[in-house]
Image (cartoon, rainbow, N blue to C red):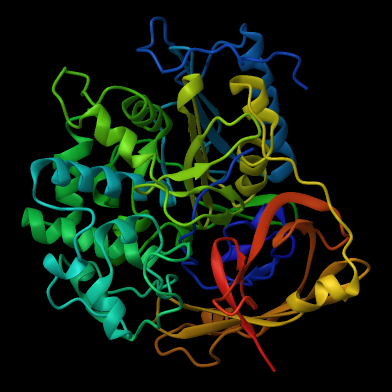
Length: 544
C-alpha cells in the first residue's frame, strides 16, 4: 500500500495496518480496513423525525445536485475544498435527510483519462461490504437456515484456528460482531477460483488466538471471511452469487458488483496515490484477492449506497414491495452490541456487522465504511434522526476528507443534531502513566502469506505517552517483485497519545496536537494493561 500520509495514530491513516507508518510503500495490494469513522454550522436538525421516510422529493444530482439548498451547498463546498487540499480527483456523496435524497458527483474518475464522476460511478467500497455479508446472513437466519448463536462448526464442521477451544466454541454472531478473538488481519491471496474462500478459511488453522471468543472487541477481517464461507455452504453457491441473489438484485442495486468483469461499460473510478501533493494514477491498486470478498470486495455507486441506507432505515421491504427482512431483524443488526472499545471513534460495540457509536445526546450512530488502496469510503446513519451520509473517493487523500465528514462533528451536528462524546486531554502524572509504558506488538499476514510485525514503544513524556512504531516486514517474500520486497523492510515513525479518561486516549500528530481519533487500553484478568487497541487492532503489551 502506498500511504502518503502522516504517521500512524493520526486521523489521516486511521485504517492502516497495525503500526503502519505514514509516507511509506507497504505492499502492492495493501490491506482491508475497518471502517470509516465519522466526521459552523448555525443550522441544527435536532427536531428531525425519528425514522427515515421514503423520499417524497428526491434531489438527485447525477453529477449536478441542488446547490440552491444551503445545507447541501455547505456540504458541496466542504467536499470541493477537501478535494483540492488532499489531492482527490473524484468523489461522490449521497445524503438522506428527512425523506429527501441528495446525490452528487465531483471531479473525474481518472487523472490520465478524465471522465466526470456522477451518482452512478462505481468505486470500491471496502469494508462496507461487511454489512452486505451481515444482511445476507440475516436473510438466512430468517429462513431458519442459520442461527446467530450457534457454533460455527454446525455449518463448517472442519473449521479450525490455532486454539482448539476457540475453534469449537466461536459462534456466528461473534464472527459478525468482531469478538471471535483470533488474529484478524489475514490478507493471503488464494487466487481467482471459486474455491478461493474455502482455501482461505482452511488456511486459518494457523491463526493465533488473542482473546477468548466473545470477550474483547478487535476488528477481524478473517472472521468475516468465515461468515462468507458459511453463506456459501448454506446456499450451495459462491459467496458473490449468494449475496447478489439474497440482497443486491432484490434491492435493484444495479451498480453493485464484486467482479471487475461485471462492471465493463460502467463509469469506473480509478485508484490514485498522492505523490508530492498530486494525485497519481495507480492501476496496481485496483485488484483485490477473491478470498477477501466477504470482508471488502464490493464495487458500488453512491446512488446504490444511499439505497442501501434507505433499506436499512426502512421496514425491510424492497422497492417492489416484497419483503426481504423483518423490521425486527434490521433493528437486531444495529442493537445488542458485542464488547465495546474504540475503532477510531468510541464504540458501544458491533451489532451484526454495524459499528454502533454513542453520542453526547444519547442517540446512536450506525456506521461503517472502508479503505482499499486509492479507494476511501464512508457510510453512516443516525436512525433516530432519519439521516444517512455516504461518501466515495478515488484517492488515498480521501482519508482526510472522510475524517472531516465522518469522524468529527461537522456533519453530525449540522445534519443530525448530535456530537461525539466529549474528550478533553488530561495530563497524567508519571505514576499514573507507568502502567501503560512499554513495548506493544501486533501482527498481520500479507497477501503472500508472510507474517509482518508492528512493534510500538511507548514511554512517559510531559503527561502523555510518546514513542515509536516500527513495522518489521519479512526481507524475502517468495514471488515478490523487487519493489514489493523493498516495501516491506523495517519502517519507523513516531506515535503519541494523551489520555482523556481512564484507559482512553486521543491520538496526537507529531507536534502533539489531537487529530480527532481515539484509542484505548485493555486490561487483562489480573487488572494489568494487556493490550493497546489502536485502530481497532490489539497490540499485546510485552512485559519484562
